[in-house]
Length: 102
Image 1 (cartoon, helix red, strand yellow):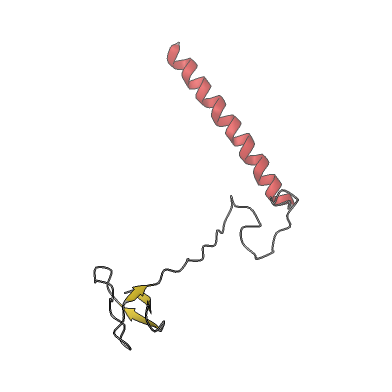
Image 2 (cartoon, helix red, strand yellow; image 1 turned 90 degrees about the vertical axis):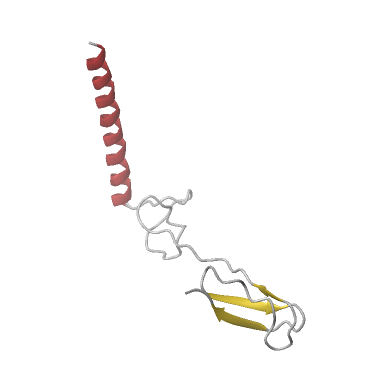
């Protein structure tokens, strides 16, 4: 069950409640019986894995060039391999279309 944070409009006290998703939000402050509202916070998202720029995650492991892309030799080799594989796939598709016509 998620924990929701609330703030009172009158006394500005903050409190948390563990609630089910389908439960109604708390409407009354437990301290002053003023109107309470649910607070919304941003959630941190970290992109890891291949296909992301090295500036997306502040780990600092890979070296970056001015465009923000990784300039490690192994990254460049992977990029070149993907380009070659894409060209082969496109060539195979063209051959298949030619065979269907013939």
